[in-house]
Image 1 (cartoon, helix red, strand yellow):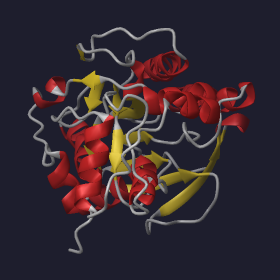
Image 2: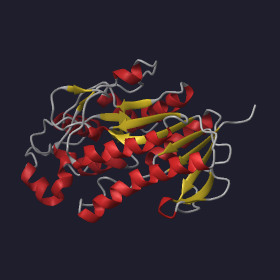
Image 3: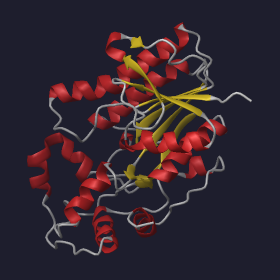
Image 4: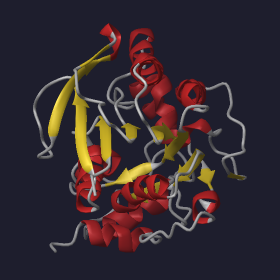
Length: 302
């Protein structure tokens, strides 16, 4: 039986690498779309450039599943007007191009799956947000809205789903790696009030959600977030406990965070309670549901 082909944009990134390993283990033929020919996952790499509307010949031939993970880092730089433009283009314009390419070239896609963000929901709300909850007028919410809307161009062509991702727990990169770096120096401290929610997901569960969506031909948005609701203060304390470090008692004032990061400070000072009931209702079972156990597994020497 011929292997089903999965093409991943952003395959050399934190999530992309883990997802590539899982999909190959499951028997899929995985290839990457990248701006360079460097392969980090022992897979074939094809070049692409959405700005030039270019995809290397053969990249999407006989492609069954297209997973779009590529996008400029949300928290990599301060949100200037220029940076916001880059964040929007790298997600919305790239998605628009991919959908257009698939249609024009009659790619036999079964499913188009795009990464998305839990930041779609309003910050600091006590109500538990689900996939039917409305966004607000914040930059991140509007970004996610247009990001997901672009993927709907294939809604009548194949299955289309959006994975609204929370903070991904992986010691090799992302938010956890940055926070742990500070905690390891014994300078870990709650930020602002410390009461803002920090939705999270273990990298293994996130990758398994993508696999689950493929295997069950799911459509629509799904919150990729673990069961446990944890605020910033408890997250910091739990991480410090796992790393056997102390927490620096004074909280970092919100005013300092705002002065350093500007509008981007909402990532640190805001937060949502998000439900994972929809993905669980499809039969998905989370492996990592407790923050302390998830962190312990990540930082174990095994």
